[in-house]
Length: 304
Image 1 (cartoon, rainbow, N blue to C red):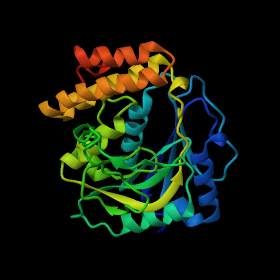
Image 2 (image 1 turned 90 degrees about the vertical axis):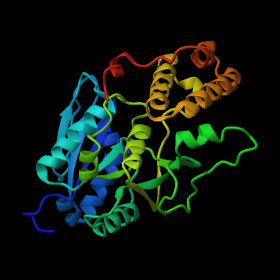
Image 3 (image 1 turned 30 degrees about the vertical axis):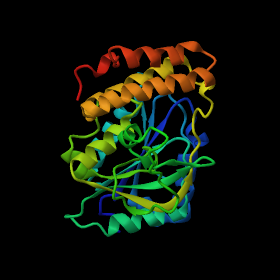
Image 4 (image 1 turned 180 degrees about the vertical axis):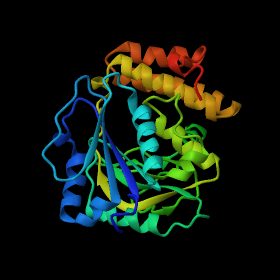
């Protein structure tokens, strides 16, 4: 790749109340580029900071665009900005990174191997790594699969560490580590704006697969720290946000049978959460939403 060529990948790292130097994603990507200068020409890096106050960039030799969004537009605002920049600079791929994902040389090599073999007629719109936090957390069977196979006598479809390649069944993956074809994002109209944070990944991969695109799972295994492994460390407000976005996802992308199965799933989950969560508001909200009208975040009512 010559200096005159556009960067192959625009990488966006979304920060929230963490200095860039403390971000595993930024530190690991910076180290990889420092060890292989050719990567510097292949990447354009955007640090999108949703923290209340702007933070100082570390003294790194790699070029970085820092964007501070004090209003905290969530992941979707960061991704829309990065997609705009990718289109402006001619990048064909967009790499999404949470602040707490550690990249490896093996992952970068596998990612470039996949994107360099894609022709214009390829249906592959995304390549995703296997993310682990003691267990595989991404990718996984899509949420509708879990709804339709929620009862004990039905066999679940897990995605294992060995499940690399193009997936034959609908899957969902975490945003972090996913590299997305810019032309495919244009085809589906960009990122689903109704999902500011929670369930944005579900909506994105559902949109891509409903439009006939395929998801490629890389053999690379990356460490990814789950923000809240303990349900009791999550505030009731955050539980509500997840529940509302989840309900919106099912309502928007599911059929009538899915809507019914989701109500059953909520009832079963509320029973489960009643045992695990100390705050009774969490399970009670799930219970009442299962029986009543679904509540959606106010800002999603008119959005796509």
